[in-house]
Amino acid sequence: MSHVVILNGPAGVGKTTVARTLAGKLPGTINVSGDTLLTFSPRDVRNYLGPGSTYHAGAALVRSYIEMRAPRVLFEYVFSRRQNIETFCRGLRPDTPVYVFTIWAPFEMVEQREATRPGRERLGPRVLDTYQTLQHNLGELGHVIHNTGPLDDTIAAIADIIATGEVTPAGSFAPARSNA
Image 1: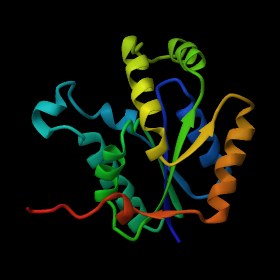
Image 2: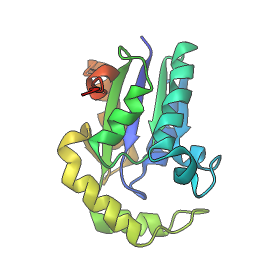
Image 3: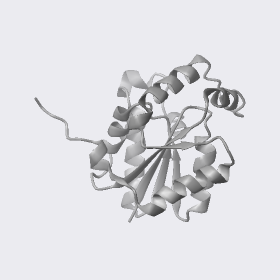
């Protein structure tokens, strides 16, 4: 059955590298980057589309690939709060299986990696702010995978969880909204 794999984590933790490597090892995987979706939007997109527009657009694209019967779709982006995951999952069919992984490393490692990412604008103090928010909410952000050793270890940890089928339906992350 088709499923969605969310790769979450702070800038510089290695989400893009993990996503590319994982997609290369799992045949038929579609790899979508939230950062790439941002390139379609004006800098002031929030003024026009409201907060969370990348989560909405990402979910719409992911849902399209799932409906085309892609075996799995990876979506890598920053989900600093459970509400971000809920916003994304509301755009999927409620029965869509979703794996949520938060890639994690010590701040010093994340800061150093973020500062040396080629072709990317430096995020400066936003790296620490995002890291601290994620750290505060780690217990609500799926499986925490430490990305401090060899890349193959990180990929193996994710692949092992996917192989066990320890999945959550999108509807569990996206409770119905109350009109009250």
